[in-house]
Image (cartoon, rainbow, N blue to C red; front, top):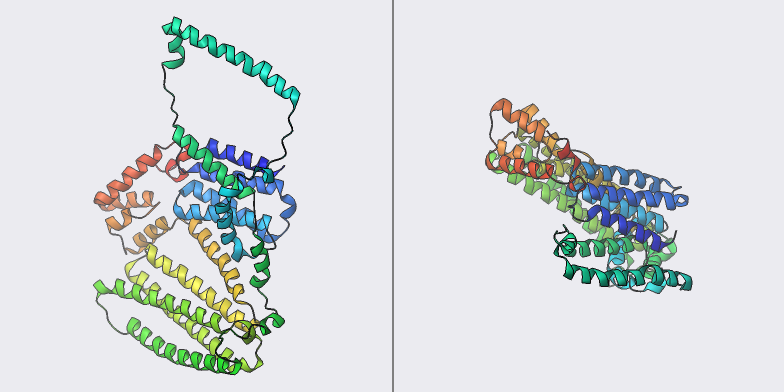
Length: 459
């Protein structure tokens, strides 16, 4: 099949699934249609593990959205299907280029779509087909239309057969669905990789070329190699000393200094945010120094040792923050934010690990981003698969922490556990609970294609 066939099929599927519907089960079905088309028509490109894994994650993310229909599962579906298409169409490109190319494709479609000669086949006029259309369609319909007008003036009942009813048809919505579905389908299937992305790909490789790096000596234009090396040693030595002092004060404030309960939440979140931001800056500093020739500089052993020490100390900082967050949960129960802290600490720990490996194995700066994109994608998948609202509710009820009615009523997808707990303890979530129950009733009235299956099975 040609590209224009793919565009036509997916456009028709989009129109049938989304016309007069809200976003719900239809998006999951459309995602499965795209994945099925990729697997069937490009099966010869499915031999590698990344593509096979992406097929599986795409299917599961579609199922997750079909069940929950929330933003996280939507993000998982979008990334899964787009990453799969990226790997199928451009397997030689690094994943760091996926999102820029997807964005460029979506913007370029507004121009490329009207270049019909580049994506539509050459039209060949079939004179016999033209005769059939004129003789069997145009001429008969012309006479039918003429006599229809005449008969309508002569009989009110005849006219009412055709005009005395209204169609449930919104022309503006129809136009929007057709245009958007065609636009998306064209962007998705008529894949275009700019020449500059192909040229940049070698520079985004995980491995460094020693010869190329020797030509990049002027990262700091004002300093020669000896000064840059000495600058790095001084910088990392001072940062190590400062981080040791910060670790001592940070742990003392958290584990030995008493804080009023009313201020504990704000203080903990401020400190966690400071830790995460400091780790981000730490990685930026390492990437700034260890680029080009410094990865191969035999005289930079001291700087590498100091940088590795700094990474290890940052690892201790993450461990301290992990313990603090766990203690905080033990005292006050789970929330979305406290679970989010675990997520960000995990990503920070993986960033430190790959930064440490970059220094040790003399990898490029792009290596870190190529790895972390996959880990961020994996975290989004995990967040979309698990019912975190119900997990928080069950945990807090089990340990009798964070069971305020307003808080529990504000969580998502915990309705059975929440209702049972409120009935057993005669609790009232007030206006928040009322809003949640109204939302449930509205979602259960949605049409089949607009619904989320969670509400269909909720009693």
